[in-house]
Image (cartoon, rainbow, N blue to C red; front, side, top):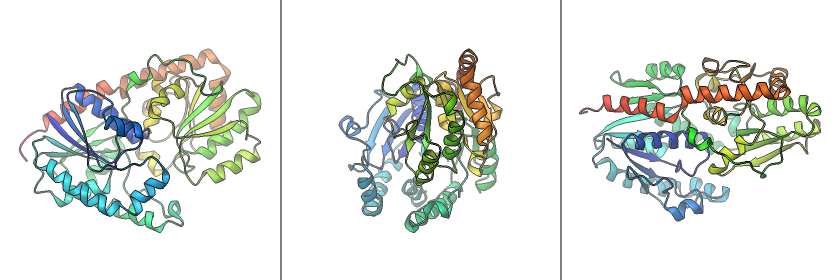
Length: 407
């Protein structure tokens, strides 16, 4: 079986949630004997990626190609590429993708990029194999308030959603991260012959094995990874919750690793008000290879996601990584998370949107170390049973194999 996988970023060098998910799925497929051609349309994320030409995993079943040779290694370069050169890059990418559409393959995997999905729509007659899309959230989740002062970005988000909605009507196979979203997309596509599979969050457990002790971060510490947002990840709730327990645990620090967001202005005001300037640290984006080390050396891993439409339908990839570390996890009861985790058994759970409830969950995790260790082990067992890359990739492989037929 051969899969063409166009993707804006190279999952092997990107530390985002979607990058980690794509990496786990690709590795699972190639380990099942699938030949994957990974086509990167957004250039290089770092110089290490450039020097290796994007090849981090040496496997005869994996081929990595690039449509453009530019860098995304700084905010300035990303802005130039998106706002100045994107038109030219889109044309180049569309032309080069046609070559792959004409080649021999079984599946074209459509990732989350407007250029890739528009190219799919423009070349439906050229595409020989079946198409598959992996979906992990609702459409039209953008909010105008998120783009205050950036009408161009809002316009791009609206256009991207419109392109995706059109593409859904022509896609053959859907891999959906939650059962809630599976029902949603079944009702959204007009392709009555489309095939669906529930493919839960997927994590590569091997990344979290045999991690050494590290002096990179001052211990003991509580760790968060994600985006510094209040609406999506509840970072403001996390900081306030930490403020409630900080006096009782004076040696613990809170480290926030992730992607910048405008909400940090509000968060810094909270940090100042609570007198936590020396206790809360923004680390920014960590190198992908540093994430396991960061998580495995923490005392506690936290995710205070509030209840929202996104939380109700989606499932956080970082939760799988948290559980894979074997460390205790504090998480809110949102979406389908309670379908997998039990409070005080495999995680310390809190009510979404409640500072007091999340502070209580953190206290329970820190108060009894032996209990926390056992809960961490049970959380790891949940990841092994439900989110294991090896298990999920075999389910995906069988699904793809069963649906191969002439269009």
